[in-house]
Image (cartoon, rainbow, N blue to C red; front, side):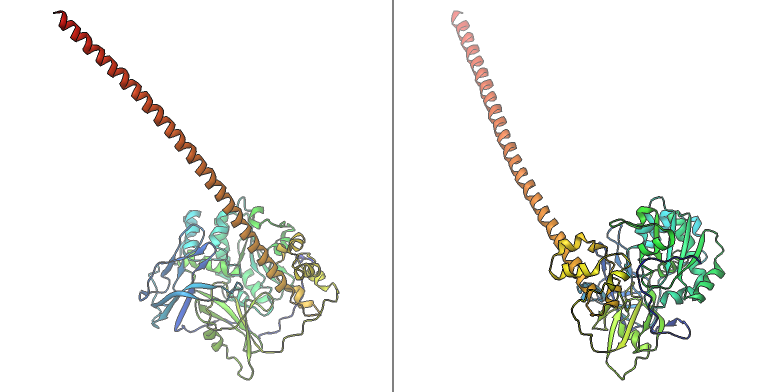
Length: 497
């Protein structure tokens, strides 16, 4: 194994170890809530309240070439289409479709199975991925079809199976139980994006998953590389640097360098869509923490946190706190009636403990030592705290991936990432407002220009009309004079006779 590592980061032991990684099929929920918020606005519902829907049926259609379809994950009746709370760091409400289950689990007609994807055009496969509702399931939720279709001169496809967040094991379980499907999913992605090679990156503490993939990999273009178990090895730019020694500069993207990164769960979803014609209606979620018995569950999208937590046998001796996504980069959840979405990889249920007391920064510098991006968190903190956002931006604040390594090592318990996240959102909002002002100014200038142009055009039209009228009057006068002269000549001629 090569030394596929990176500077900074921290080694965090899994605090919630299990004897055996499993996948439990979660029971059908009584209802689901499907959020319709996408990258490029809201998807358009194509069902109405009272409609009966089947599993896999499209309930929100694509309005453009960027976003993906949404599908019902249960059969039943549409109860409502309204705005509801979703576990999202923005805290905004999202338009949602609520469906009540009939308990029958009736699917749409499915003619998948034994499909030779090489007989399809790449464009057709990209369309299948889009219509199946597949997005990046590692957390970002970026539409998969956009990534695999927009890359130019692709040379390397990286499948991210690192699962660097401590305690999360859904991808580990997926690799152990579905290695054959994952390898075939990688081959499909290789064919679509035209990459020369693929690398499946997996941390060296997942030996069972590593051996399972090795057993089923018979493709010379697919390499399976083990990397050190260190947080945050799963960050795209860090993973590329560790595997390929290629640095993606600030403001640039992997696809600009001919590299595509896809999550292992996304890869399995691509297999399901292309080979089995199965849209993305479920995913594997890790339920862990010291307040439950840790395990993995395959659960239908839209199922409430509460439904899944109840299956993990939570302890009732203490009050619990809830977090989704990860113990480091996740977000806290207050209402466990919120739904599981495509990017929900894990739910943490822990016994509540007193919050640590935040103290003044002692300038120890530990945050700078562990920052995997090479930023200066301490300096950024002072700038953000004093609301000097412009200076913070000059210190590459937008490059912060909010991994919380600095939070983890801070002896003063300062929530550094919260400061940075706020500053990034504030700066982004300022940019949006500035663009709106500039846009409004340009519209105003254009309006003034248009009004002045119209005024000049109307004035010219009036001049042209006056000129035409004058010419017409002159012409008519001339013709009238000619007629008068003609009449006089005829009269004179008559008088002579």
